[in-house]
Image (cartoon, rainbow, N blue to C red):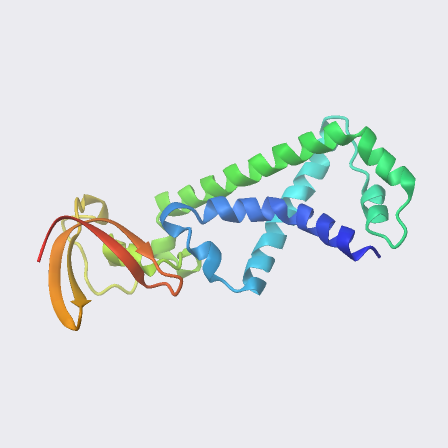
Length: 204
């Protein structure tokens, strides 16, 4: 088996899952894409990739096209035949169209799936859907919607929160200073903590 070629083909087959994940874990939750273990990322990438390729395999038949799996199996074999590469060259446009539409659809599906989870508040209701950016839920007050939250908003909802006022202690040259202001934005560190926060109307 040609190890280099097999690895390249495997990576190419996993791209739909990679694209799906990249658009699902986007914006304020993009850090999650880098926080999971390699094994977790691999598994959650393989399954979407298999699903998209499975759907595209049958969609190609609906459009009168045939995905020849024998060619794919041959090029990753120990001695790929010249005929397989000629076949790929002759159908390069169809292969390109197949993959471009597949990648675009995977990205759109990932983004729309994330929007559905957020709009339906599934990540607040079910821990299975919850993103690992805990600071977002804390700073935006969305933790009030968690099933185990002890604080209940009786007359308002989380969506009624118009601004977030922050008190932050900053240590400078061994001295501690208290800053307060309206939260504008924040950045997470690689460990999941707060790296930086941006405040409007800040004062010490």
